[in-house]
Image (cartoon, rainbow, N blue to C red; front, side):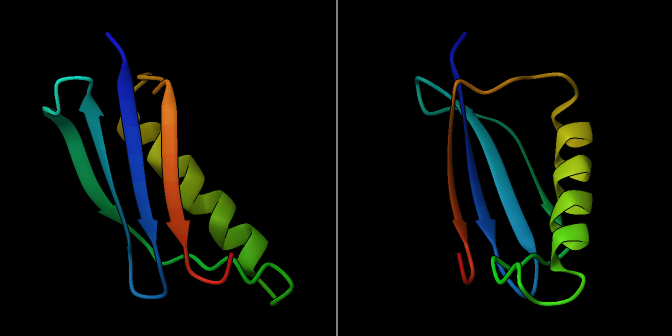
Length: 73
């Protein structure tokens, strides 16, 4: 089954949704805030931490496509 991951990362929260080719939502959630302003102190670590949390939330599912909107990126 093909799956698709959408990510909306911003300064308040990072929201994500995993769907299939038919448009059915398989999973979704909210994580901590992120920023694409990676020259700012601590942003690399924060982005990495949220990425690790997202990977855990996906529970081994590997989407075939990812679309992300990240503030400042």
